[in-house]
Image: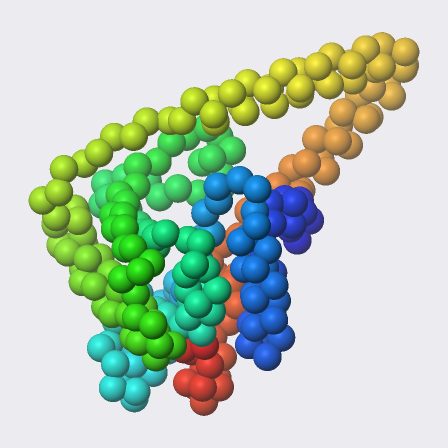
Length: 253
């Protein structure tokens, strides 16, 4: 995807094909590269492997029931192969895993791309639990079971949030906004302002009708691109659920 895909590539995202035969080597090389990364880093891993939809939840529940696993109500069954590989390759240089659970308060508007573009904020609840890497099991089967157990606990945590609109009795910690982000925003704002000034100076040498046509065309292109990005990012346009048998074979990858 244009723009989003480019930004992911420049940010060192790991691109996978959802085919373990191909992805195993890709993931291995990417994780080995992180071992000598020159700066502190964090690696976000969405173990479900796909976006949450009602249809995918139903498929996950059917699989869990047939495999003898706890049937989830608020999460999908995790695909553990990538998680196991990540733990095995990063155990020696990553000190901890942060289990993050996100939920939306009942009376708050959900965050959307349109709200972000309009500068409208949204409230979310996060439950973050730190697990030392050395506490994880040593075997592949043990790591996979640990991951599934975490999702069972995550499912119960989300069920509590649905009932009580909170993750429990723990105190809410306000962490504010980091100063580095503010500096980055100021830097980009100055750069864009400088570019805009140069851009409008260039406009002064053009006839007025050319300026109007160029501006109108530019705004139309930007509006169309934003609309395409917003629509394509909605969960309704995510990867469709696979037929039942292939899903049962691949859901825990």
